[in-house]
Length: 430
Ligand SMILES: [Fe+2]
Image (cartoon, rainbow, N blue to C red; front, side, top):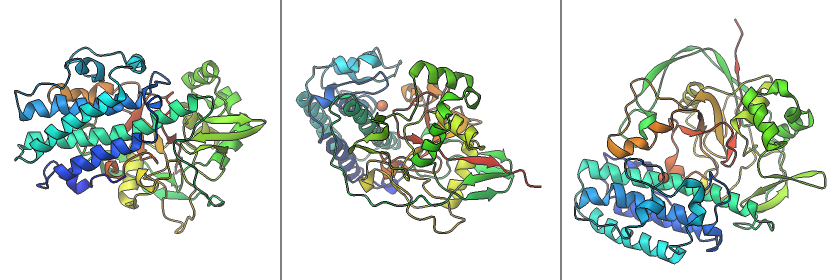
């Protein structure tokens, strides 16, 4: 499951991109391999896309934004694919409605593989020649885009398998050892003017720039993520039945969706189980809770007499802590894992792995933000409304995508991604 490294990814780096291209493209195919052709065509819900669509769309991205820049005479592999596999680029042309991607039974999976092979051959030939800075930047963006889709491929496949009455597994379960969740510590941080946002030459998305100043009040930051056991305590205390804990829109979502537990939790004869890519098993009380919405995270924080961190708080802690990569895609765990040791009481754990962490920050542009020029300006900028920022990484995130400045974003009711909770508090000491 190798991917390319951050140093490979730099648009300014002189490193050859051919090996990185092969690794990323090969990793996507490998992630799809455990799924049947039927699995790969299904669309279980509007937000999720079929695996086959991810395989084709990531290929369309190179065919649309890279190859014509390298060769103005380039002709698409199939004229129908621009309609079928354009995701949301209005300036590129019309497209299959997102909720109906599962109706694309043709081209077949084999034909999509042939599409990938054809574009890969053309890309490899291109990558053997000198690249202009703009072309190099587009190739790097295409690889970063494909790694984002590797995570989506897995979370969408989980949704597909969870929709099958037989609850098939993606990969067999690993033996796990029982551990107790270490105590949660509060890490205190001083108030002050901080800098946040990406700086330097390495790759980042446009929404991570520019680096700018923000004032942060004195706060306390939880040393670890909220666990399933803590979430069960919230549920058993009537968390899903107490309107005063919820934002108005959140309570409406609880009522209309019938939420009474995290997504992928199943009640089997009074015992809560959790379904993941490794199958159904009793809820592990020491693992981080996953697949909760912003509304649920916010209500839990209120119940716990705390709050969600702002993205500025999260970033300055993560930048300062510089922890190693934790439970990301390369561990192969494919589900959140318990924290084994708290070690140093001043340390912050689980920042870069297990689950994405909801913040209290709306997804809006940084001061002086400027989107990419042209159609690629649609990549991030047009979603800066009615969504919330998540930070960190999940057990489905390729390690090479992980940065302290990375801004993930989803609507507040979304639950199909591996999204969890870290708490923060105002520090009112004088
Ligand atoms: Fe995409």
